Image (tube, rainbow, N blue to C red; front, side):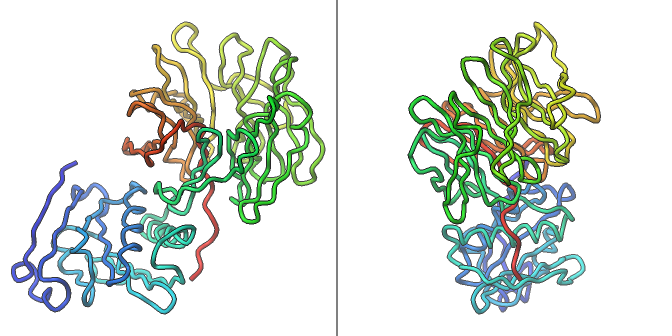
Length: 427
């Protein structure tokens, strides 16, 4: 992708620019005309933090080509000037203005000169802490208006870091510890409504599944996970009423389901004994099936069963002697694919198995890559990778192939889980 740096003089390109904006504006435009719609974000003084977050969110959606403005050129000092950006091939302009208690945003369609949508949002313009989520929701509204597809800015990614579970906004900012240090916490999973997180907590060599409310902080142990051994890899059902997990004891590792809405009714789904471990369950979006990893064939592979444990069978084709064990399946939110990692030629790579074609493709090649988790748009994956020399979180856009590191952390990062969209926008 070409990077073009342009120094534009208002007197040459736009006679009215001197009254509308700064007399000089520097654009670092990272797009090729006609590939994806170009978009520019301009903000009134005092909204620089909001502008940067929206700009980054739209970039990370991978649905736009962003006209990035340098810090001293992104200030809107007068009426928004669509003529300037129209001459550069930019299709959309986002105008941010201060409003009482928040921000007024307008979405300009530059070729027609029309304002296609506008929003008034009560939000903290400093863009700090959890208040950032309101800005992310605005970004998603802009994405949906232009592309008719909901964005993923207003989401969070949960992960294990050393002995704790953490969360971070989808743009890699606002990292916060979730677990309380009462044990070694790992394998987080987020409820469909985004209000609860469940994770394994190892205490004195035993592992229980903790269910924690993200708003109140209230915690409880999930029934059936505190009866000895280790209970690992919990997963919420799509309706949030049930949970499936793996319980590992001296008798083997099998999958169990529990009614967490009623805190009762634990039932066993697999019976492999000591010779066949089953783990890492993941529900289909309709809740009717569960995919999981099992080594019942001698090497761990991806199987599927009905949600009641019946009709267990292989799901992802396996070439014996050609590929190694497969682990950590995650069913895409649109139901079209399964992502997992598999040992290949001495390495570990992320694979995606597509149900419509029956094809399994490798989507990573560099470093050791593990534990994929889908974004709500069924287009992006987060996973851990050693491609920079140590485990870090990376995000892959399957449509464009763009790869980016979410953030840089000190310590071993593992087992990421992408949350559903957080809350609803408030106009």
